[in-house]
Length: 155
Image (cartoon, rainbow, N blue to C red; front, side, top):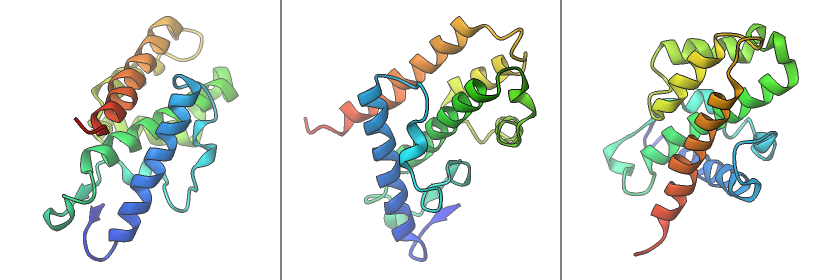
């Protein structure tokens, strides 16, 4: 997706959605469960925003990196929900299949740890190393949510 003059307002709403998600993640203290319930899927369907590009004309107003990373964080939140909800059947869920395909296509590249998470999950629930999985989620939270919010503060 390209953000330009035709969909500039959509880009702004997507930034607002990412910031709302980050707010709830910060209040929760990490990626736990159900953080994306606050997001309107008609405004911000994270898989649609993976790899988003912002035209140069709007780069000063719409933060491409924030949108790209936020989309991956939202996908990881939903993925985490799928694992909790479906346990040993999570790999057969349509959303998980979509995320695995996105990872294989390089669409999670904005957050390199996401590749490691998906590869870890491919082992299946019975073989999943939950300690490594939780550690990777914590790294994503610390590096991309907490650090990003700190970066937004004036210096």
